[in-house]
Image 1 (spheres, rainbow, N blue to C red):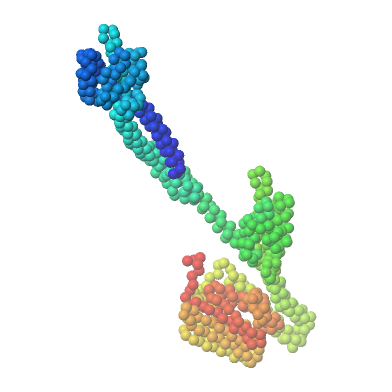
Image 2 (spheres, one colour):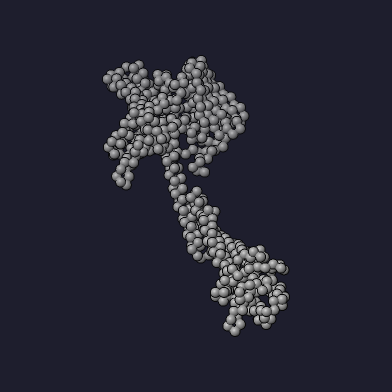
Length: 594
């Protein structure tokens, strides 16, 4: 803006300077001419006075004329030269005494002879100065009696002329400074709003939409600044709205559960959301600005992208891709991005991870198969022994008792299986609720010990209990006893004769730890992740012979989760297994309820 100010002030200053210089150049000669005319009038009048005195004295009285000429020259401050009709010098105020001069050939004398009078400015050789000469012809009765010449030194006129130029220079300088000051002030008044508008415009261009300018008076610049403020406010609102929409869109893209991949028309990947990194287990940020077939390492995905580029139509595929050490299932939808000119601008790919759905589907199939298998075994036994009895075996008392005993056991097993299925279904239901009460876990493990003592004694297994601290918690006593019963019963089932099962309680700062440890067959590390699945058995023959349904630990898991307890298991093959359940002393409120 300084350059704009300079471009505005400098030409105006030059114009003013030129105008003042031209005015000075015009006024100087005018003043000089005016003063010259005044001096000419003066010398003419003084010449008339001298001529009157000459006529009064007479041309014959040379001595008196010289004396009078000297006196007049001194008083009038002029040089007086008197010549007779023959142009011989009679009197000269500037000549040294005794020196004769011939002035008959002087220009002013010759012009006076021919025209009657003359004016001439020239350098005088006699006085060594530039003089203004005025010469006139003296006549008496119509006859020329002589010539009178007056010379006025121009030193005074030059001094006056210099004074005039000094006066003009000083005056014009002051005028120039005043005009320059007023021009600068007016320029500042005119340019300041423009500078302010420019400053605000630059800040708006840099993204600072809070910048405002002073509106000032209701003139053109005021209207400009007012419009600029309105523009800034509108831009701020638009930008704020755009930023909010952009943030919402980015939040949606980054936090959506599905992977999102955007590829431009050149094949470069321009957008990868956070879910892609989690789905592909790769640093997908490295994919950005790379060709899709070089960045993506899965040929099925590359083939899908190529099909969409070729057909420019949406495609949906179910892809099974190796991710890490496992195979994961994806439902992939790809669609072309068509611009307003019907030109392909890129494609978008959306990856839905349906691996868990596949697992659930497989678990459902396994559950149905397991239930069918578990139900088929006792039902087959019941049917087989019933048919055998009906076929005549019931006539033999020994066979009848034996078969009826087996039928009774299989019925109990079938009843237990159905009861556990119903119980598990109830626990997993949405409306399942616990009956929260104060529970003494020490009293509970003593009850469980009494309930399972006979079963342990049959296998000569020692049941042990140990309590440290006060194991009082809040929970559902019926469900807690169910957890402990299933854990201890499972421990007895998988412990060989002569072994031991320990139940330990230890109070901690905010929790109570329940441990059920056995000296049984143990569990290998590869089987631990599936331990709490429905119908999963480490030793199927042993579990079935013990009357187990394969649902006990699944029930333990769900009831522990209902109590917000932490369930953990450690095991070593042929040495034993330890189940650890950490209960909170106080009821933990669900976050959704809070």
